[in-house]
Image (cartoon, rainbow, N blue to C red):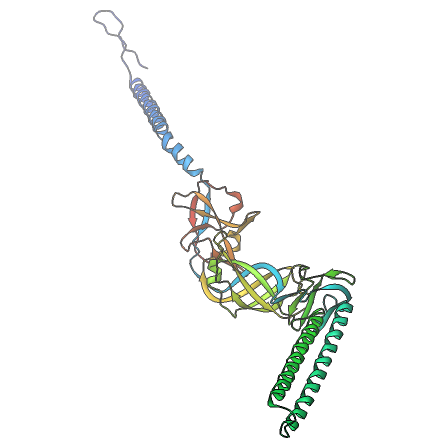
Length: 393
């Protein structure tokens, strides 16, 4: 800095040099820069604070989990119907006492044995009935002898009437005697035949050829018409499975459809054929009975439980990947996302199960949005952010 002295008043005057002016300009620039920086920081602070509310709203929206959903659409499948039911004789024949009964002397068959029509299954003591039959047979012989005698007297009378030794009235009486003897013979014969028929009915006989299923009588037992069923038979050994199905399955199940029946505890299946579909639906359960005819096999035991798969032709059903199917003690189900993006449980009934797709026989519409996977981590009523997945992805 340079100092110059003035000579007029004797005071000392400071005169700035060029370096002092430059310093003041620098200080002003620094101050202005600092003020600008502070202003920018203040603006940024207020802008950040004003944007906190939208950010919070956005974070709340981000809390809904993103899940993949799929629209099942229509799948062409060979439709099959699965059912459970019991095995039974197709035509079961209860065999009881046809006659007056008595004490059983012999039982000639065992369960599981094949018999022919009319074969004796058990015999009943007939000692008294035999004596009665013999007495009636003797009466037949007496009546026959009386008829022979009456006929002979009538023949002699007809020879003598022409000679005038016997009147026509005597001949007519002998004719009446002969006719009465003939009538008595017929009555005696009918009575004896009735007794023989009664004796034959004492035997318990098979009404038709078939398989003996149960035996409920033993030697020494006293039986009568009130004894009920003594034997149960399967006519011709024919078996069947009786399964209950919902009415929509019954409507799609034709008579003659082929079926595979698997008894419980067996790994072997037996081929059968639907021979009757119930014309009546139970108003309480909304189900009917389908009857599947089966050929005889020792493994098919009446009263046993079995499952069946019936081919009912081709059709269209909704199809889902196996990852979308869940199950619990209540059965199979899927999670469906409604229009408000809320998860809802939907019980379903499965149709044909393929390697990667499962046909849904009932419980699902073709335009439903179904959670494709990770359904086990969701809860009914939960809000989600669905992401539509195209089939095949």
